[in-house]
Image (cartoon, rainbow, N blue to C red; front, side, top):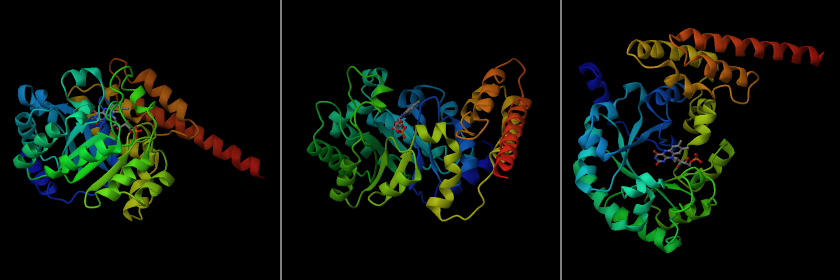
Amino acid sequence: MNSSETTDTTMNAHKTLDRTFSVAPMMDWTDRHCRYFHRLLSEHALLYTEMVTTGALVFGDKDRFLQHTPEEYPLALQLGGNDPEHLALSARYGEQASYQEVNLNVGCPSDRVQNGRIGACLMAEPEVVAAAVRAMKNSVSIPVTVKHRIGINGRESYEELVDFVGTVAEAGCETFIVHARIAILEGLSPKENRDVPPLKPEVVYQLKKDFPDLEITINGGIKSFDEISQHLQYLDGVMLGREAYHNPYLLAEVDNRLYGSEKKLPERKVIIEQMLPYIEAELSRGTYLSHITRHLLGLYQGEPGARRFRRYISENAHKKGAGLEVLMNAVEAVETLRLQVMESNDRGGC
Ligand SMILES: Cc1cc2nc3c(=O)[nH]c(=O)nc-3n(C[C@H](O)[C@H](O)[C@H](O)COP(=O)(O)O)c2cc1C
């Protein structure tokens, strides 16, 4: 970032965060290109980075891992780690880079993560999470939040969940993002762990009743505004992962439905047009086109021509020398088809 951007971002960092709606941290998915795209769809949704491990920040190329643009705000950094000193240092790096929240991952069940004793397995060690939160809180002035499950196998009772949340809250965490299913740490892949254990939103509602002063966001399996409204009757926020990624146009309605905005919904092709200058700049820095366009594939989800859009981009964006024309052609193909469908619907109506 240049110095004028730093001034802007520092000012931004003090904006109060509204967590009514957020897009979940998703490894390999919510990278900076994806977040730039999501932000064009919603001004207010809180966006999360992919998980960044403390090892990457403390011993690696931290500027690369923390890279983002001011357009992405409001923006939270998710960390993976368990060592209080490393987490405190990583949180400080995040704050210095102008992230507006730092979130600790206590929900990811992958083996790789478990071997490093980070992610969901930490739910068995509330004191370790509490020490981590305390150290991070002492190190930064931005909010420190925790994302976790309602339990892990062998530690599934509501009392144990209350013990976890109570212990971590005492350490100063005021915001909890709760994936409303347990994680099974042996025998299920991370993907299965997002689908197989049943969702139990009522457990999260109960948590809010028992900890009314905490801010509690629910995550897991949410796909529609009806479900969102239902959850928001009981809770402070909703976080969507896969649905936001696969059906990103849903984000276009977030500002009007949840934040009182009255703007006209942006047309999909206008969103693509707004992406073009960004993509052009990225291509000139050596970014591959397909690394950006892969996040756009779901934009026409549910619309006539969605498959044509997706296929055209998938088949062409990775080719050597591929440029903006791939996207423009894909949009033209889908818009032409939409027009034909509308015309034939009109004729059918006569
Ligand atoms: C591809 C993928 C990567 C994910 N990576 C992370 C991650 O880095 N950190 C995290 O806390 N959760 C991660 N998750 C879990 C999501 O944040 C979320 O908790 C989960 O997908 C359930 O929400 P959903 O049903 O709305 O997708 C990931 C999920 C997916 C699909």
